[in-house]
Length: 602
Image (cartoon, rainbow, N blue to C red):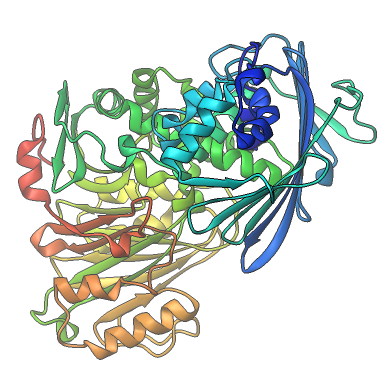
């Protein structure tokens, strides 16, 4: 999709083919005319053979441009098919395998539109390494670009054979008829230019397909931001891989960097906390929203045939009656600080309903010092770039128990947390997606951190609350060295005690609760038994290493709730969290740094 959309970019200008004498430049000139916008009517076909899940799979791409405003972009794969048809007054996004087409009409804003003019600048941000090469896309000077490619990319070309190379792993050749073939590692691309574009179909010409109206701004913004965010994740620049580690402050909030880890301290009323969250993490929250709503949203729409924003809104409509007013106030204050639609941010905050993970708690005879260690592995979608927004929040809300929440900018709920009463919690997603007539999982987790001083109170909160979907949890209390595993869905709840045998988890292990699935559960159990009686903080972190953590491992946390200490690691763009260094965070110390310390209500 990126290749096709970038080819649409640029404004009309004249190339200088007469000045090019390099044979490679002559061959590249037709493609550069497309990239620079010199040629505003064309059609190009691409066949991409790409290894996916161990098999070579074929993706077919057709791109046709019809002047300043109009183009077609078709993507076809054995499992999915998507077509974008843009005309001056409307845009269609069709999913033929689902028999549905989303149509937006009227004007589209320049900021995030699919207008071909200048599209590459909207798709390629400074947060991707591709931005270094973006200026070349606007130039039709084949001689200059060819010289740059040879000097900086090491490209060689033999005009006699019409074959060339770029480094050790990439090769290209110009075939008879003017087509271009590119091989890089296990990927092969075949590109063919047509003399003229095929006939332009109407934006409503979709026989036997159901049409659904979407605001055009929303439709084009989703596609542009989705592709832009995907490019940032695939080829991140130093803006993302080495972000500025500058401490910042605002009323009711402070941002601190601790050993390269982003920590945000928030205190006050729900409105004050939400506003400070948005002011301190504006860029990080926007990146997170782009990852979820736009990058993931485009993929999910293609996969399901349903507009992702509609699914989020429908889920929120059923979940919202069970969300405390103080959380709604906080979310909407954050949205206003971010300059975003409040309803949108409300809906986005139920996205953690999709998380999946592993966890354990060990204590007593299982540990070196008898202390309770609670490990939590979050395995979820590093591929959409949530790691760029990773933040540990230290929250001291008026009238509530202060707590630490290992989370992501833009989200106020919790999936991993510990409070000042030595309660720690971690969740593991199961099935049952769509059963949303209850309290959102991340809301229930945060309520436990804010409201519960004992393990029995946490258990009662889950038992007495309407629940959603299917989730598994580990709850722990460092004051009493108690822990429990939980299997819960809307209809039932089961508490698994330390040492208790379970058909899903195997024989019980004394003074231990161990939850995971498949081979990861087998390895985790083996590790706990191997190190039984020797487990401390270092061993606890090892218990969560690969393969217990998946390649999609977004964050790991080892809680030592009795000491009010936790060890946190976050994924980066190359490594899962389990392969990244841990930072030690002390909740008591961090609360003294908060803008104001609020005593818990009990």
